[in-house]
Amino acid sequence: MASSEVARQLQNDNCRPLSLSGHVGFDSLPDQLVNKSVNQGFCFNILCIGETGIGKSTLIDTLFNTSFDDRVSTHFQPNVRLRAQTYELQESNVRLKLTIVNTVGFGDQINKEDSYQPIVDYIDAQFEAYLQEELKIKRSLYNYHDTRIHVCLYFISPTGHSLKTLDLLTMKNLDSKVNIIPVIAKADTISKTELQKFKIKLMSELVSNGVQIYQFPTDDETISKINATMNGHLPFAVVGSMEEMKIGNKMVKARQYPWGIVQVENENHCDFVKLREMLICTNMEDLREQTHARHYELYRRCKLEEMGFRDTGPENKPVRVPLLKGYTDSKKSISHSHASVESLQETYEAKRHEFFGELQRKEEEMRQMFVQRVKEKEAILKEAERELQAKFEHLKRLHQEERMKLEEKRKLLEDDMIAFNKRKAATELLQAQAFASTPSVSLKKDKDRKKDPGFRLELLCFDVRDHEIVNVQEQSEREKLERDRISHREFQK
Ligand SMILES: Nc1nc2c(ncn2[C@@H]2O[C@H](COP(=O)(O)OP(=O)(O)OP(=O)(O)O)[C@@H](O)[C@H]2O)c(=O)[nH]1
Ligand SMILES: [Mg+2]
Image (tube, rainbow, N blue to C red; front, side):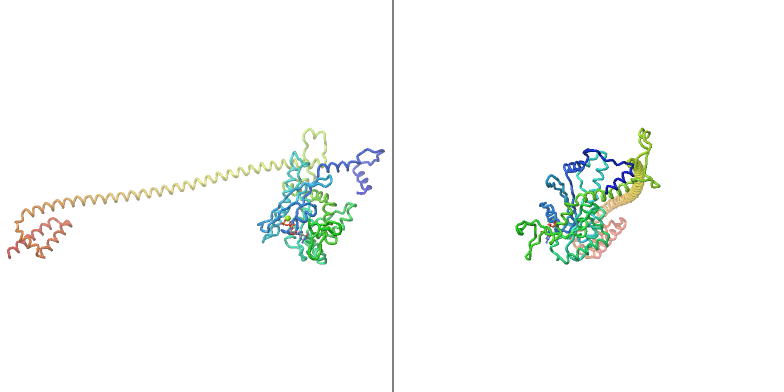
């Protein structure tokens, strides 16, 4: 801001500019700030998005001149997973807590439709954690390990064609949440002319699809020129390597091929140096600031609005609430900042009431539902009991009928048995009487008689009839007849 503009602003704020007559010492404020920041240390979080094996780890190692020993990922992940690792680095007396978040399995699934979702969720989760810390009554943001993503290095395959749908979709879903710096990975695998065309094509595709990538800021005079130039070089075409080779009398990072050597830090070979300059040396603080002031602010606003908080009431007036008793009497009006704080309190109270009301309503609803369910269950049980009782009665009746039938049968059988026994006794008596009244015949005659087939048949019939319990009278008649026949035969003889 120009000094004349500052003076005008001060006058507008009813503030009179004065000049000091001697040295006071507050010109050391920036130094105090620097000292404080140095003591506190810094944190920076990088998210690397790119297909498996595209060169993410190698580039990060090359950027920070350190071997982070990141594990190699497999191509067979069922879905995209995010892996974060934090490192403590120190350069001179400046400490940096660096978190590198890697997308594991990105682009390896057959259906890549939702590949960006775990990344969006991860970024939001870091914002949410920060917001929760901010909303605490006792906050400790000073010691808080801020895990919000400050920059996303998006690795594009050096195909020379165009952006993949996955790349477009992912960047589109992330551009309002994180500062995206696209890079063309393994730029040594694409020719110089192809690379230029590829860069132009990528940028036009990003623009036509409305993808907002991070632009290096140009509002600070000291860096505006370089940043503006660098914005024209996006996306950076990078090469990574931790291998060192002697070129001339200098050891340089390079990749060696049968046809020559690609030097990582040679600006004629790739844009690695540009990326390192822009990302680490010039704009690291801006990336941190943008994350807080733009992306986090947007998340916070949406989240608080979603929760029902508002800065303005109906008719677009700032929300004001009665001040605490005692405090109100001494102050007639409240400043806007107070108003928003108290609007928060008011909204909180309103939300609390709403929440308890809702809770009670739900509780009552659940109780009613429970009673209803119990009633229904009871009715079902009663019905089942009735059915069971009817079944039991029916079976009981059947059983009784069966028993009565059997009883009748038993009685009949007993009667039959008594009649049989009686008949048997009578037959035996008649037989005995018949034998007693029959004249004795010689054995010889008996034998002769038995030889007669007619006689034997008669005897057999007699036996069978005897067995079948013939009528006693019939039997005696038959015996009489027999006797007559025998006597007739004997007479003939
Ligand atoms: N040609 C070329 N190869 C590279 C470049 N950077 C890395 N590589 C090679 O690519 C392979 C994979 O590199 P990594 O850095 O492990 O890739 P990554 O993306 O971290 O892999 P994952 O973490 O397993 O997904 C290694 O063989 C590297 O040597 C590069 O700029 N150019
Ligand atoms: Mg890796």
